[in-house]
Image (cartoon, rainbow, N blue to C red):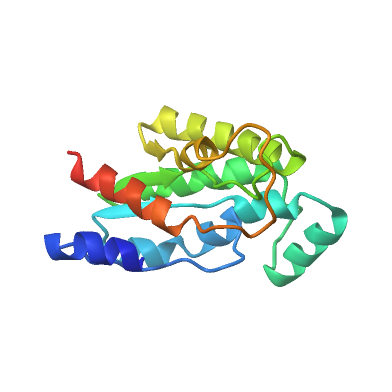
Length: 175
């Protein structure tokens, strides 16, 4: 948020950070009224990394269900359903320009199981955005393009914050 405020604040943009770490798409859907009440001109949405992580093992699923108070198993289909409901509500109940960001890499092993799952979720996200005429910004593809083929780096290397700020700034200033 800081980078966006720094870059776009002088042009009159104000920012509200409605992000809650650890949330899944279902949690975002439950809190959507807070976003709608702000009467935003633009909404950026980056949701799904925790949905992917929750699907990795029964232990992770149980932990996410407990801490995020999920009413059901966090499956791929449930993620898709919740994203559709988020996009549809924002489309119906706001006049906001909606900018959805692809899920970022999870780790830097492009060929690993984790990023194969991320790509499955991103494919579904892009399809849902396309059907609704909503922009889906290529965060994952841009990050992946920075890595050489076969690259494997330690977990936690780098930050996606500057990349997100670049994508949103470009989207808002290119029209």
